[in-house]
Image 1 (cartoon, one colour):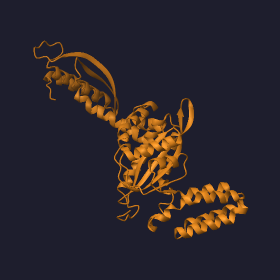
Image 2 (tube, rainbow, N blue to C red; image 1 turned 90 degrees about the horizontal axis):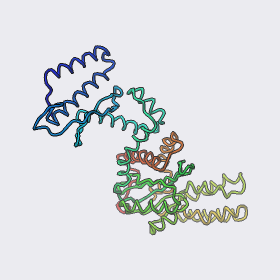
Image 3 (cartoon, rainbow, N blue to C red; image 1 turned 60 degrees about the vertical axis):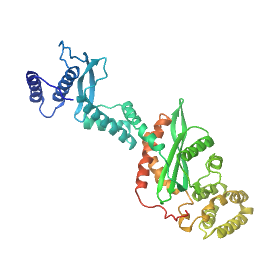
Image 4 (cartoon, rainbow, N blue to C red; image 1 turned 60 degrees about the horizontal axis):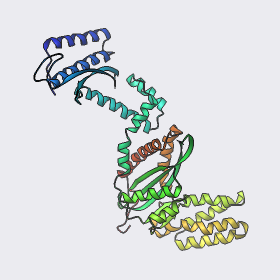
Length: 392
């Protein structure tokens, strides 16, 4: 909107700005900018009302209602301005909108530093050094909360069809009801028909394991996840029942890496760990399923007398790790464990290590979503993870 300023008023404003520049020089532009902003807003209000202060006019479109002080954070420091008010109107000076955008840019920078894992103390120090503005931890938290709409949109976006889905869980400390609790972070990664890896979703909750897994898997379905031919996951509590309920006909590949780790709990003597690990590796790296089953049966027979609990465990659990043998040979190595999620977990650990303890589940979800959203973007534009055939 354009507005007129009388010549004598311009002269007064110009003299005030020049006096401020003479007194402070170019090293301190805050006072001249404050003068210019204040005068520009006053002139814009006059144009909006179509009448000057105390001016009687039939064309007047409202009445002035004083001023409201506002602290505006900008790249050259904090500006103290007086925002003109208008009675019975939602008018706001466009001259200040540019300043508001600068303030929003600063808030976005705060949120980005938070997402990158910078502590609130360091954020405050950085902003004070660059902009001359003190920032509290509460302001950093509010800035991070401004990301919620964007992050929620990513979590609710439509999903592509995926042949393989990898599921994993990690735990972070969260303050809840005056106590510090372990909060489950559920992650899902898929391989699309084009052979690209994509992060499908994340969920954070303190609910029961099965209920949490079931709700998470149902949310993936609701967002359009179809075409799943194999689910790869560890033996997380509640996951079996949830998976059977939501994806009843989809085969399950239990993570072979975790199976080898789990087996060590049933080894009766320390010196046996090496040979047990070697026996399981031979099973998992067999050229085909028949050979894997033969080697497993041999291992069970071997340990029936020397380690009966281990033999019983192997007979019940190890077959759950052989499903990958039904896949094309070129897919087996990458579909037999959840190690492909290692980058996700490492990056999450690096970012969450700074926070140590999250004040609530919402703050944890915010940070985790921002981190994995970045990784998903890289994967979507990156290299092919698996070469998929038309029927895969």
